Length: 423
Image (cartoon, rainbow, N blue to C red; front, side, top):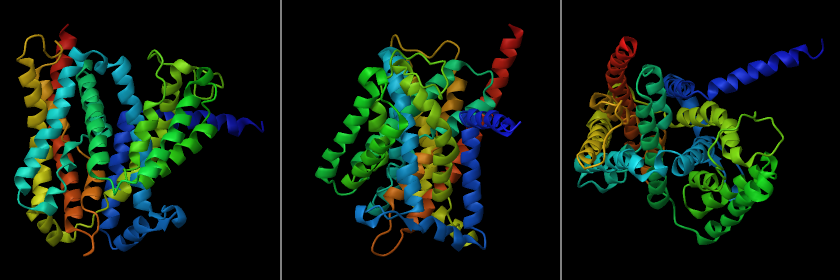
């Protein structure tokens, strides 16, 4: 009888972690954290929110006395990027990106969905060097939100549509990672950057020697933290460390393991799957919501503040780029390529389905908020007003894109359901 409470708690814990691995759940938590931050930041207790976000912790000797908001953006978000790296590597080795012909359409759509929004933003903000610093803000699609919306409204949509969106979003994230590394890092420090190779190599070796027998969390975690610290010190955005570490993890033959994460047996073929299985709840339930909580708490300043944001070309450029630019870039690139011989959509996918998906790619949240923070950091004259205006625009554009995409895809879902019932 003494063990009964423990036996009851374990299934509950397993149910919670299983729920957190669901993309829809992650999207709802992300939305809830965003709404909570917005309400708190715009309530009479708004200063307490700002004080919490700006509270600094960490060892100053290592230049890690960072605010809680920075720890969420640079530290916790590295978990999200580690999972994105695993997803990308899996797609490259065993998924849609393995076959160049099948991968061409979503990959090209991702590129179009980066280039065209950037062009829209630059066109609106031409002639303003300070505003042009945010050119990359509307280039990213939020995987968690977009897939969550698709999961909610798309019970009968073709599976190929989800695969297309997933591949597009993974490539989109890879491009965003490269942009962050190249354009939004600090002054490059060679010594820490070169030194970061040592823990990354050690991480890779532990994942591979003796079939991954030494790939234990208590060995891998210190190496991952050290790699993160060194990359952070190098001037490159620290989340890049998560991607580099993910690329060292062996994928095996791409078969999912049937073992639970509590198994003590080594299974090199499923190492990446077991890592993803263990970290997905951490990312969806903690890392991404906390980042959203600290990043999205923008004080709107009442009617005057909203009016100022609307008049800021930065905000206008972001909204136009995410809602219209993403749609034109993704759908236009896909349509243009399918005019070429040998390239076509999956037979189950129609152009109206693609139109809904293209609208959904305008949900730029996690990475867009991160790039906004990096683009408009506080200067000698204090915080840039563009930073808050950009965040307001990201939130507004993401809501508009999500609603428009959901409406179109919901209608298409009814169409596909009727066809399935008729068959």
